[in-house]
Amino acid sequence: MQTIGRFAPSPSGRMHLGNVLCALLAFLSARQQNGQFLLRIEDLDAMRCPRSFADLIMDDLRWLGLDWDGEVPYQSERSDIYAHYEAILREKGLLYPCFCSRAALHAASAPHLSDGRVIYAGTCRDLTPKQVAEKRKTRVPATRVRVPDTVVRFTDAVWGDYEENLAQECGDFIVRRSDGVFAYQLAVVVDDALTGVNEVVRGADLISSTPRQIWLYRQFGFTPPRFAHLPLLCDHDGRRLSKRDEDLDLGLLRQRFSPEQVIGALACAAGLIDRPEPVAARELVLSFDWAKVPRHDLYLPDIFR
Ligand code: GLU
Image (cartoon, rainbow, N blue to C red):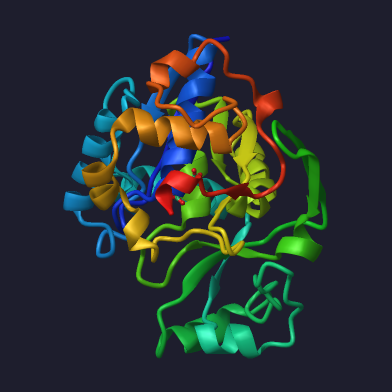
């Protein structure tokens, strides 16, 4: 079966080096297998994701030499499709309205996980129809999906075997916010499945989302893709890079470096080449191998200091 990989940025800002690393490895893995490489704009939260940023991301990807195949879907235009899949979950009796405020969620005595996530305490899980009708008078609910007490396992191309008990380590999760915006967890599964994506490459910060996504794939009768979660890029103090590191966004980097310098430095940080010498992305395709990518956090190459 042909490999179909993808890069799915959220355009809430300009790409930073962590995003570029992710795009590069997703591109190299797909191209090395003679596969397709798709681009999707994850602008579910359209207020925070203006078109101008999506345009800049595409311009930056072209500048980096990371070309993609086919049309670019925008999640903000696909609500009808997500609603169809939400209805499938509803028909299975898996959804319920949740009236909890953010403050209530954090105050509930539910366990907090090491990554800061809170397991939903189940406050709205078993409301009677009468209680729901009463609460609807004062508050618009979010929609939550009921997860079973089941372990979901997968083998990650970088991290090896990974498993999570959905009820104990994840909890019922939101599929649609109270403002009507669909949640990333639902949209990403529907979009990857409908576009035939069978290889998902993304940052390790998303690995804890993967078990619930695999479970959603199964609810819809889709086959889950292969996953590769990349180690995160850290600065020299061991701090993970984020969108706040504006000095490392592509706007400024493009003024200081050539695309080959950026690609070469990141490829070296990711273990793909021995020295951070300038190289075009397409020149790394043939020798790409997941076995070279380390499991530990990656250090920001010196040229970006
Ligand atoms: N849109 C997500 C982000 O930019 C990535 C989602 C994914 O690759 O599954 O963080």
